Image (cartoon, rainbow, N blue to C red; front, side, top):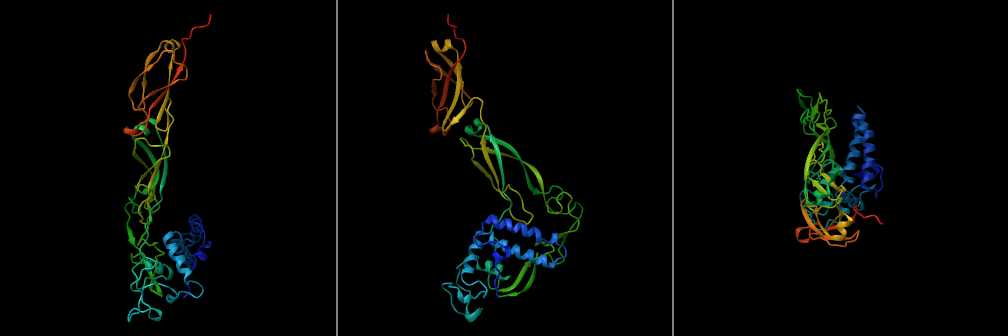
Length: 357
């Protein structure tokens, strides 16, 4: 039996990147999708094959197993279990393959049942293939955070547009008041049994319901039967103390949902610190400027200086201070309480200057 060459099916090279594989698959899927080719059985079969190829090549683990199997004998001559060096195995009087080979007692490639099922369409002596964890689309948003909140911590609120449960049909996909029917072609199983293969009877996704097991005659107007719609959702997240510009917060499971029943993706929040009109930050130190008069500079004075932490500190300015001199307020900068930086105050002398005679 000749094995399927998934690279040829998708028309990509063996060293193609995941992004290239995805891009090629999208173009082919759009071209051969049953909805775009109603009644075209050839296009329907082509769609199934390219979907199968994409399912393997887009998953790094499956792709690695597939590449290893191709290396050990998949080609124009087909698959021969005797060509494989599986290590420890034995002959048995039951369940023999070619040459008395039995699949008992080894696990060379991990879930061999899954990958063989995808190659030849059936699981045979193996368990049904287990799907690798896949989730819906991740969402990435950028949120601007005030400098004080970045240093002290706090909460920020923002809204995102995301694919989520349709509020009109509550995710059912059917127009309110109508019903969802069991798929008449697959009887609600989502799969159809095909011909036999080297490892047993093959099963393929039902082309009528696309594996869902149900059909909708009167789809929801809001989501067109998908059960998902773009909605606006508001989130409030806690900003950790002393966060830096560009840091990310992950909200697990708050990304977009998938109408194939997969778990939702994640929401990644990238924090950007807004410039402050009075403070600036350099590492653990907070910088600011304070203006005094020439008389105050000559005679000395004290001023109240606000800090990034919300309080004020009385700062003594010595007599004769020069313009541009920087004074230090200890432990009023950023950082953990036991390793906090300082607040650096630059003195600017302005006004009240006596004119020269």
